[in-house]
View 1 (cartoon, rainbow, N blue to C red):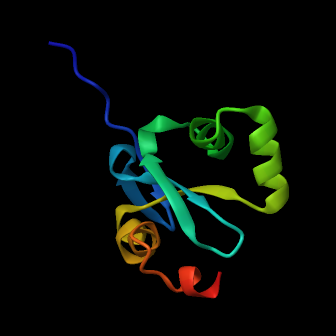
View 2 (tube, rainbow, N blue to C red):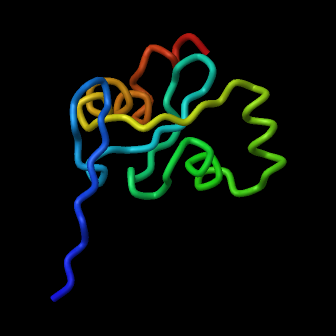
Amino acid sequence: MPTTPLLFVTLDGVNWPLVSCRWVRYLPNGCATGSSYGTSATDAAAAAAHFTPAARDRAREHRRGVIYRLVSPDEWTATVRACLLGECTHQAAA
């Protein structure tokens, strides 16, 4: 039976299985507005294409300061989750 290799990434000096990490879309104010499996993209540019398929829309987002970052499960739980649930401080500041 074939097996799938387990890939690891190092985030902030800690090794994490890629499958447990998430790509996160951040607005310029730091608010996370989207999350996707770590295995959905190989880098930030591919993550941007995953979230926003049209190149013209991606260019507009880039000009606005939208960024994509791979985050650990710990960071996702500590900061991203609240944003996605509308419970973060960014929402009040917007």
